[in-house]
Image: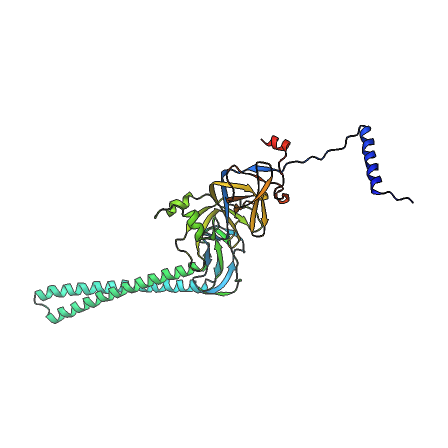
Length: 391
């Protein structure tokens, strides 16, 4: 078979092109499109600052008995919503009932002794007054007068002692009545029942934890804020004594669950300690959230998002930034429509889309946004038609 050399191939290709042209067929021309660009300008933006937080009921109460005895009945279950005053637990009240009955009997006896002492004192008084009259008439001796006087004084002392006994007996009755009331444990606040580590029939004492009642009408998200953030954001320009006023001026905050779900009700910063933790260099902070539907529980963890506004900053898309080792580059479009790499300093906005440029660019600079990773130094990125349309 006869070989075809390179010259022959060129001639054949030229003839083919000529044939296609003579037949009226147009060969498509290569077109170049411009990269997407933007002009840098300053604007205001909100930065979502995020802090790990743990929820706690604003009125969490540890429920412990105030008397010892056998736990007879548990009226609630874990996770149950209860109202203030609702019965939670009942402790065996028989001993307390016996103590109350004994105290009442002692009170009755003390009252009887007081009645007798009063009667005896009244008799002694009459005898003393009678002997006084007789002594003045020289009918009785001074000995009989003094003897009746001593009897009267002793009767008065007996009355005082009887009254003290009645007072003590009354106190014993009241104490026994209170102890009997302690056998029925009620909810001090409305909320949700936590873990119940005891069972019916257990012996309990004032040291036994029965459960934790989380008052969940309002929940507090507890988190830490670094000292640097406090100085630059929260307390910026704050005068002495104006902390409460400044906290009240802060924007609403959002709570995001661990699964990424955003809690529908906004919260407010309500507390900020004035002491920096020496170990962590942070301040404890609380944000209160309404919990009308009971969806928040003590102990759940998530993220508190606090928006801070930045005014007059240069914001560009993340897609415009090219990462090169430890540098951040942006391709700036020069007057001849070619691109040149500029090293910039940036700050993350936290919204997943934009960054703030702090150094490297000026207002009015045009930069490549979409496709910046594919641009090479000195490459033309704007072409006449596209450049014309952008003006």
